[in-house]
Length: 458
Image (cartoon, rainbow, N blue to C red):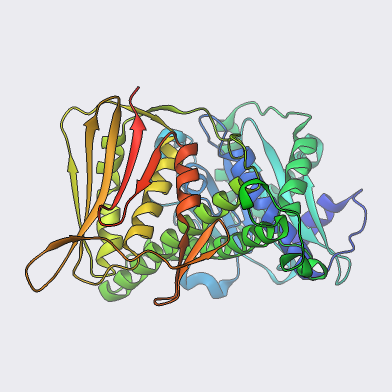
């Protein structure tokens, strides 16, 4: 059984496509983002398995850590992906759950055969959600396939099992045990309708056609408060998406290589630096995407499916992030100091997004600092709020003096600002303030006194 036969099974009964390769790849990346962000990550006690070809299609670190996977990959990628079955858990080991998330993704490499083709393919099986995604079709007639039907997925898993029985009996045995450990599978009949609706929304928010480019300079409709034209924001969202997805794939491959024990120390160090840079830029462009999306919803409505604010231990969050921020800033020749008052109460916020937002704030604040500067972050109680202050010291002829980076001088719409002296592009003050408001915080920025964010105490 070839993987091409599996694609043909998924394509049965689906109308022929009319897309070119670029268009269908865009649909594929949008479908992956929709599946991960809107359907898999919100699942409670996430556990399950996935199978993909010719690369690990999933790229969210949380999913790669909590789900167990198999990847049919070309032999040319042996240097990047671990040897076949090297990372596969024993068949009788317990299934991974949300509490088992470790520092490395758990997936095994399987050999890709000539008859398998190179179009992307992904099967995800969890107790609450089962889905198959694939790209198929001849040039000019390409199409994205997304199947949720239990009978189709059951037959697809049977084909996969038959393939493994003939090529790798150990993998077939492990897959069978994993499926048994998941227990009964439940399928929501409305999944398909909700998925295609959300995917359509995501695709509609991407870059407009080149025929719409005059909207960026012509008299396009404006949002309230002087926001950018909708077409410009859509283009910005598309750019951030196109940057994040390949970076996430590069990071996945880098982390696969880091699991090898035969890597020279210098090579490992360089790979870790690449991994850090990829993570930093993924988070940075993720914030830009959220800021652009917020501009398209200029009212007080939350972004997307943002949950209600919850009790958050801000002091603990800062302590956990301190080593990461020290490493990031040290790559630019900057030092980092964290000062926390004792026995601080919890605040109301969204801890998941707050972690990324605080990292973006430090990046925005420190991007234009000269080497040798010391970034200082403090958290103290201030009446009914916690006061988070970000400042810095820069070396000078008379010793260290309080300073702050020069603000960007050019505004690129309401989302981005640009410093023409350094070429630095970052979130604008307005966008940063609005994002913090979504997280329960209030940002103030005064020249000469750094940045301050106030969070309400529970």
